[in-house]
Image: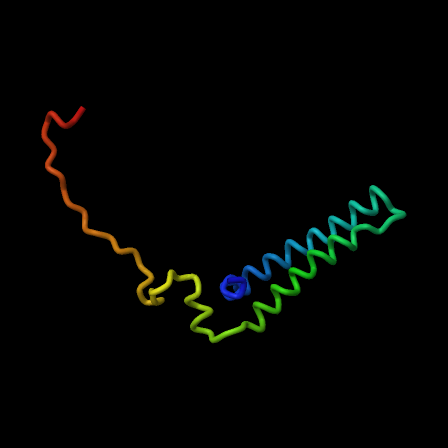
Length: 102
């Protein structure tokens, strides 16, 4: 199941995650230096979060499985990418009577 979720990650999501990560790295550094300059605790959340960013980068740039499976992994089972549309029924006009209107 983990690999199916990983296949649906695209580059745009990765770059968004990377931007957020880098922003928080700077914020963690600033907060650390303002609140407790003698102790460098900011490195621990940066390393922990960095592991997940690294794993996501591997999944995005070195995908596992064939490309067709990657593209259609978000669709429900038994459906093709060509069938990805809403099955809408045509609207039917109702004949309302005067007493139906309140």
